[in-house]
Image 1 (cartoon, protein in one colour):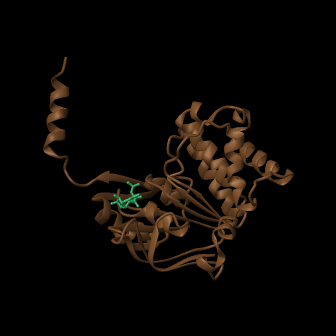
Image 2 (tube, protein in one colour):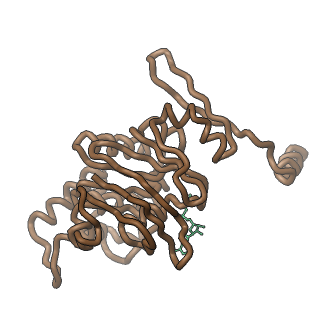
Image 3 (spheres, protein in one colour):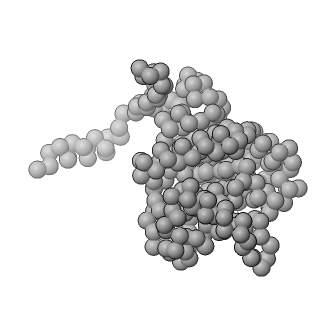
Length: 272
Ligand SMILES: Nc1ncnc2c1ncn2[C@@H]1O[C@H](COP(=O)(O)OP(=O)(O)OP(=O)(O)O)[C@@H](O)[C@H]1O
């Protein structure tokens, strides 16, 4: 469905990610994991041309992204960025932005646009917020607005950069359920997640990044047994199967705490 061939990209002349080869398939959830600054967000931005692609090609359904053009590409690929600017517009208006790729200028929303947005807001559970101003919402509520905006495009591919940010635990679980539903509908889901246990549980495929490169690819089981998690994050990763046969992963710190942390801990023990 979506394929990156030898892609190098960044924000100036020096590439932040280099020689990326990856394929994101239909009806599958692929999760990108890796330490802070390893290039996960940049990889997603390279797909949607929000950073400079210095080398290589992005293909959608076998067609070169450059030949498809921005508008047609955006009709098929939605992107939820890691951070957003909150405008002084209503939730309903903001979600309608997800329909921009279908409109020509000057923009006139049609019945279908309003219906897609209503469906997305209903799915995300924010219909009751539709007349509220986005900049007056909480961080979690805003995150839901941007998720609804991404869904309103009803695209084939969804790129989610840390979609669980700001969400409470109930809604984090709800979001994972949503990703599974998208997958069942045959959508391609690519997501960046920091929660490794969640990544291991929901992903059909995992890409591990370090220093701007993909250093490992595979299923959760393959990634866990490869030892790459220990290497990249300096932690230990283990799994166990519960009495229902469900597999769980857990992670522990491998390196000792820095001396300054121990001093703070010691200090607080003596407090009071
Ligand atoms: N807009 C930008 N301009 C210049 N450099 C940037 C920009 N955005 C990111 N970078 C740099 O690119 C590198 C990779 O950043 P990126 O955001 O892709 O990492 P990440 O793996 O998503 O990190 P995190 O887990 O912290 O979100 C970092 O060194 C960062 O400083």
